[in-house]
Amino acid sequence: VMTLYREREIPVYISKDGRYLFLNALDTSQEIPKVTPTVSSTLTPTQAPKYSTEELQKFVDCLNEAGLKIYGAKWCPHCQNLVNMLGGYDVVEKIYVECTEQQEVCDSEGVTAYPTIKINGEEYMGARTFEGLSKATGCPVPAE
Image 1: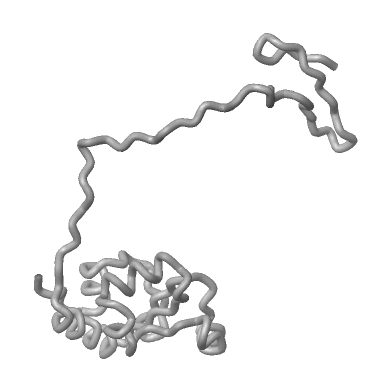
Image 2: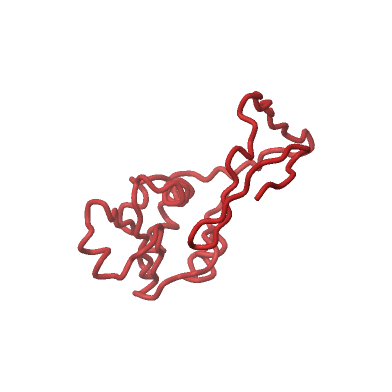
């Protein structure tokens, strides 16, 4: 069967399982123009508030006392963002479990995605922000 595509007739085949095959549907002799993405000048990056290491450590210590644990992997960008928000790996050491190094712990906790946050063994599904963690644990948000 032939069909018209972009003012050109191309053959259409049907496979044994009923799928359509369009051979030569794309003209590969012409170069595809490269498009340079543009960024709107009205958008500005959000500036994250700056917290002192002491304030972040107090917040993380409170999270630890509240029974919060973060299960993650260093290759996971979402884990890195969360850890960096809380002051880095040195600050979160008490509440962070690196699943690539402690897989048996993560398996026993039923961790299947990163990062997983648990509070007293219950998975926390709320916002991964200072405010969200504060609301879930009662820990005061760090002072700027």
